[in-house]
Length: 271
Image (tube, rainbow, N blue to C red; front, top):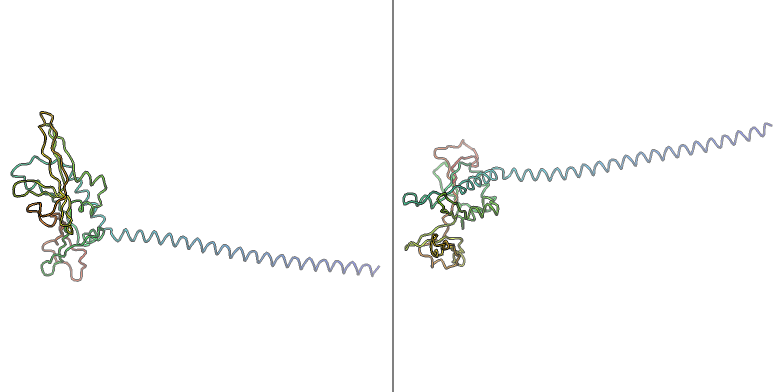
């Protein structure tokens, strides 16, 4: 009886030891699984932070790029709006007294030097530095190849450009006024040329001339229209070698910047 009891005790003890070893193995495996899960969570968190950092950096770079041209963009939008509003106004009837003023389009705006420099940099145009009075910043001057180049600098859309270059205004008396945003040249014999563009290298010029009207409005004749031609510069008598379209900035007269103040903050007049 004792021998049988001892055998049963040994078997029970062996089974308990095996069960304990299995429990220990399972506990260690659970610990490893928890450790592995923690590592996976850490990797996923690192990936998320990396993606957030990259997207955040991209957004920051976009903001910084926009901030870089903040003054120039604001000046560009302001000048574009001023020009569009001005060109939407029907021109007054021409008279001998107003003949010259109606042939010129001029805009003026107050701007700081930094905004003007940013505008020129955005448009990738070179500005001449006009020597100023001692102690005052130098002025800026840009000469354009054509009137269309001015619209390009102001980032006018295709529709805005088309409307700016040519627009008609019906009057109450039945007549129609036309406004053309082109360089206008009148030669010595009174012939009017509209200068569209110049090719300095080829020494040629693209012009538009009014075709003589056929008949009259009363007999149903066709109104005069513009015809394009490409000519040598020498074939247009008295035409200047450069386009008169300019954009200039001059510092405000009498303004004395504080000692050490940056030139970008100097106020002036843009014409």
